[in-house]
Image 1 (tube, helix red, strand yellow):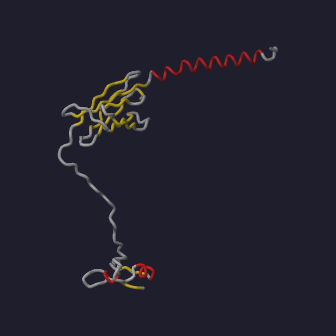
Image 2 (spheres, one colour):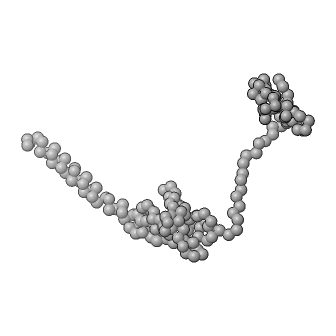
Image 3 (cartoon, helix red, strand yellow):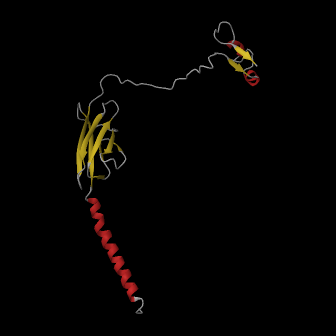
Length: 181
C-alpha cells in the first residue's frame, strides 16, 4: 500500500471501530427501559377466564398512543414492550361491567402480572339512539310538493302501478295533495 493511502485506511478503520462500539453498547440500554404487562381477565363471580375482552393501555405520560389488546381463550394477553412508567389499564367485555382505569407501573426487563376481575352485568343495558332532527325552515312551512312532468311519467296512473299518483291525492288520504306543473 502506498504511503498516501495508509492514513486514509487508518482513519476508515478507526471510524468503523467506533461505530461498531457505539452500536454494540447502545442496544442493551433500550432493554433496560422497557417491560411488559401480562394481563389476565376473569369473571369476578367464578374466576373463570374471559376470552375476547378488550384491554386498553393508556400512557400516563401521554407520549404513546393507546394500546388496544384482546384477551385470548385463556383470558390472558401479554403487551408489547412498554416504557417503564405508570400505564392506565381498562378492560371491557360483553355481558360484563367495564373495569375502571387502574394504574399499573411497568418494571424494566420484567413481565408484570395484572389480574382484572370483571363483574357480570346486572339488569338490562340501556342503549340511547340519537340522530339529527330534520328542522322545518320558517320560510317554507307548506306541506305540499310540486311534481314535474318526468315524475308524472315515472309514476304513471294505471291500475297495475302501486305508486299511482291518484292514490296519493284521494280524499281518504287527508293532508296530501298533488300539484302538477
